[in-house]
Each structure stands twice: as C-alpha cells, then as structure tokens.
Amino acid sequence: MSPISTSSENRAKFGINLGFDTFDLEHDVTLSSDRNIIDTEFRVITIAPIFAYSVNNNIDFYVKAGVTLWDADLESKDLSMSYSLDGEDFIFGLGATYQSHNGAYSGIEISKADFSDSGFDVDTVMISIKFGYTFGLNSAR
Image 1: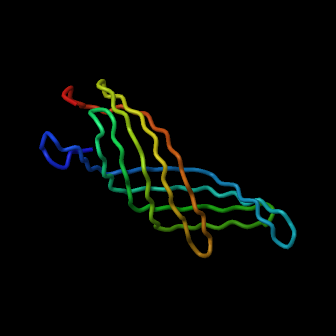
Image 2 (image 1 turned 120 degrees about the horizontal axis):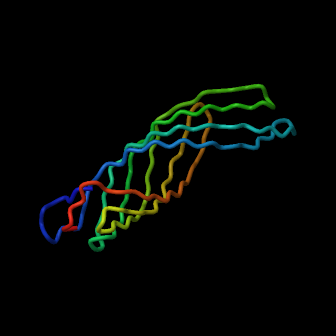
Image 3 (image 1 turned 180 degrees about the horizontal axis):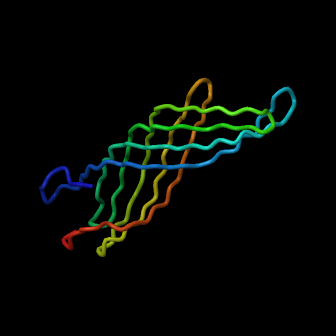
C-alpha cells in the first residue's frame, strides 16, 4: 500500500486488493419431503480499493469495498440436475496486518459478499488469515 501523502505525520494508505478464491459449498435442500444434496463450486475474482490507517510502523487496520466477479457450478446427483450461474456483486471487509522489518507480514480479514443470480442467493461471511512477504521493503519502515 502507498501512503496518501509524503508528510511525516501521514498514517493513511491506499491500495488495491486483487484476489482469486475458489471454494465448495454443500447445500442440504428439502423438496417434497425428500432430502437432496446440492454441491456448488465457486470461483471468485475480487477487485477492491483498500484504505488503511497505520497505528505504528508495523500495524495497519484497513477497510475494503469493491466488486466480485464470480461463477458457480451447481450439481445434484439426487435431482439429476446441474446449473451454471455467474454475476457481479458487492464485497466489503475489515482487516489488520502486521508487517515485520524483514519483509514478512501476517494478517486477518473478515469480509462479506452476497452472490445472487436467477433466484439463487448465497450470503457469505469469510474469515481469512494471511501470511506473505513484501519484496523491496525499505529498511526505513
């Protein structure tokens, strides 16, 4: 993330979150008193601006809000059916990161997105734990 200004008192930062996630959901659906399992495979691309505030040189708290571009494949062997769905929906989240002086970082984020298409609605709350390394980190951080 980049500082919003070059002032030494500036603690605000801006960045862009680009992400790709894939996950599976299993739905237990009752139709006409018969229990049916529907498996759903999601693929999600996220594009979201991030605004962060640095508490100190190592800890940032941030918010993000953007769009998800997604598609999902639904299949039920019980009902002998399969569907493909897709959409563009809003996502928002809150998080915190810890950046060490050697370039390694860790963080936690909670985000919410509602996926909707053709009467199919899935409301998700995701908790992500992340670890990584920032290349080119200057030692003045």
